[in-house]
Length: 420
Image (cartoon, rainbow, N blue to C red; front, side, top):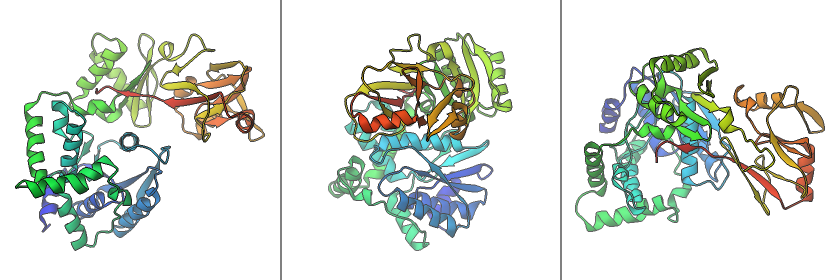
């Protein structure tokens, strides 16, 4: 350890933890991986594929970084569309990264001082209140940003001096993107007209706001909800979490409990430890799926009128007049057809690919949790299974897409955050 950057990173991490680096292929996370490899071998690398224009190039860069360190790289695939917004990509990225974490692991990202200054300005221009002036928080119980006090300029200098492989995403030069305009034009202009570094001033302001303000825990944004549904990362409520009671109280309020007592906590612990389903509170059940604990109320989730619907648990449905491209989340329905929504029954089959396939097999192939299978919506047209929403269409549905370009039923997954 002989560089200032290396010393800062080392002070900001707990080497006793299992560390997971979100490797993007860009300079920030590549430098972070290079430094951490010098400090500890107890790390693993994860890349999230966003399916954007230059995502394959970034994936190649991430693989080069992993190869240079002789480390494995896990690629996480997403279902993002090629024109997804920054917000959509960020939400999808963190959802997958946090679900990917194992017990006692901490997620590390390459956020830096420059990101913090840019975020403060973005929040300010969007009309933020006091909360937004805190910009980017450095740490929570699930993730850490050990380079948050290091500038982008210093990171580039380190990368070039130490021959760290990385790729500059070409979209970073597109000043039509607000963050790029702030980074490439506005902040340099501010530094040119006013003495001192704006990044330093922004950091001092955000740190003071965070210190002086009384705010709720930032991890609330990782709790997701919809009608009859709550999802919370298991790491937030495991036995070692100091803030477990706080998060569980938030869940309890949403599902209608007056208090979250010891017996309720023991049920959640049992679900996490034994990976089982339990009846929890009134009609709510509790079970584990991937890295999250789910609470679900079938009566609130399911619809009473299954012939006229627009929402179903965390699924939203709408009819549109036309669509450019069909995918697994949209189908064409012949006008005048009888459309209904149901859940799977034993032995349920769909005709697809000229074969009769059990719905349970489709769920298994797509990794749908065994409990969620009981609530997953199936669309029927004229009493024939037409669409396993988001997963598989019948041959009849595919044929109708070629014949009809109107009366399109679109489905989407809508989960809102506890943090507003």
